[in-house]
Length: 145
Image (cartoon, rainbow, N blue to C red; front, side, top):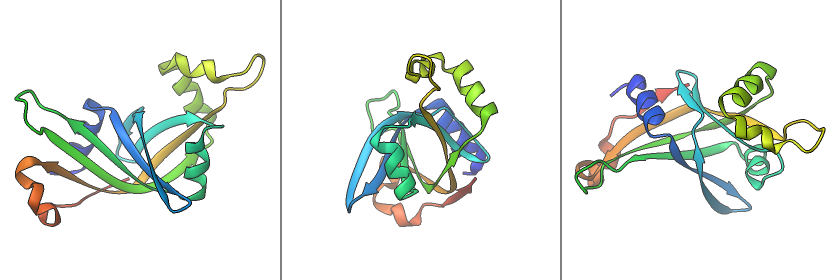
């Protein structure tokens, strides 16, 4: 397994569960990955949502991506631990609005789009399967972004 395997798996299975921690409590929510590349995992959220506040207060997160497979088994999961970087980049925002037009609906009448683009970077990732379930500590860790 290598970084390319991690990137490909995330892009092919873009529904992710993101775990944050705030006030000593875990918070998990489903997000749609925008894209993954050698620099990390790209997402967006509304600037007024609790998630945006939590990411600023504590940028350490964990992601989980899952491919359930086709045989009714447990499939395969990718777990990623990393640090969030909030990106204030006009070109990225333009690209996001072009690729995901629905995001533009987060703009109030006559106002700017209220979106935060963030990257999960400096990642350690590993794959999980039913066969490796009891051997998690033995699974190779893959560095990314």
